[in-house]
Image (cartoon, rainbow, N blue to C red; front, side, top):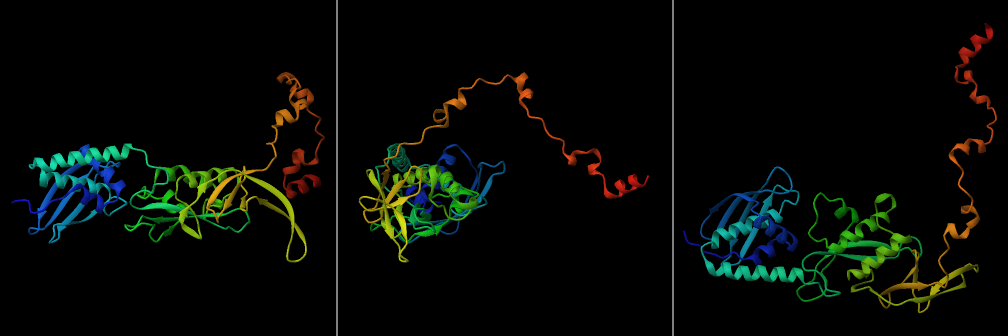
Length: 349
């Protein structure tokens, strides 16, 4: 039977996300696709049944249906027994195996695909330009005011770049959804793996939303901003960027009830984040940067109390001579643990 339709790598990449396609290509290249069976239902539809050797001892099973439209565009729908279940990396590997079977005797598509594979490797090896957003789905981070002043909360959302430019409607998610997931979601980027442990340490009891504070909050904010995917919640179209140092000023301000309270502000205006060391956030300009407190870091305990550390070490054999005498305690009497019945019987005898 002749081959009625074409199945290109771009078709497989569009059906599966980019990360699943890249991993499926590795699986296919290493010969992990086993027992492939292809059955045609008419001239425009086929069903492929296969097994793929994954990370578990038991191979995963796949059923992939590929149907071509009247204009020749394929529609891929694959199911797998792995946790991801639909259009996963195993399905991508099976589609590549089907594509090789369809076009195995045609040298022209093979040469074209070798060129495409070389371009894929070249693009993967080239570093991404600063501020370049990933393709496909990816995470963005939204900073919003928290319950305490100077301690903003971090929200995570999934989105992608629209064809006409700009970001699509974000879908809110939680840190636990992707850090404790059974499988690695395809929207995670290498920067997300680096910042996830820091955000997890900022969650109260390991759950809920991360709250920026302390040393972990300082490094988490810097990593989020450098990723180019951190936004202020009121302006999710302009990512926050790093800026220069701003001086800190202390003063007093009058509250509504007439009482005075300490005011900690930076110049130009911005909100001081209670991290260690402190940072400032200027939502109007969309910048984050360090704060010049004018206070040197505290000296270590070894230099602040030299007399404590200059004393000679006590020999091990003389340690008991310095132990103060322990006064006798009535609770340590031998019959203290005895029951009241035993003590009464002993007194009568």
